[in-house]
Length: 105
Image (cartoon, rainbow, N blue to C red; front, side, top):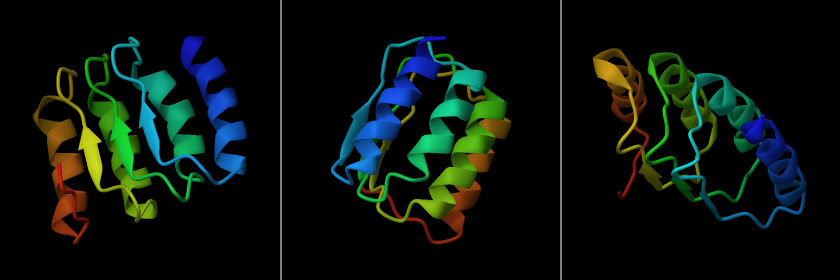
């Protein structure tokens, strides 16, 4: 529910094309919430810094995030520490990095 409301607000921010940083750390965002956020993050063309640390994102969420990272060329910083990605979730993100996506952090 909280991620749904956050996604609605984010849609408005992204429509203004001014969102460079999104910090949604420590919000108990899980796979379902991240899936909803990803539907909006993909349209935030100016987004450079994405902090998803200390949530409850699992393998499914990591897979959806990997799809969005392929689309979002501007993201250069990504924080996923303290989540529940597991080895398969980490592999999904690593695969995107292996395709040439570059992150500075």
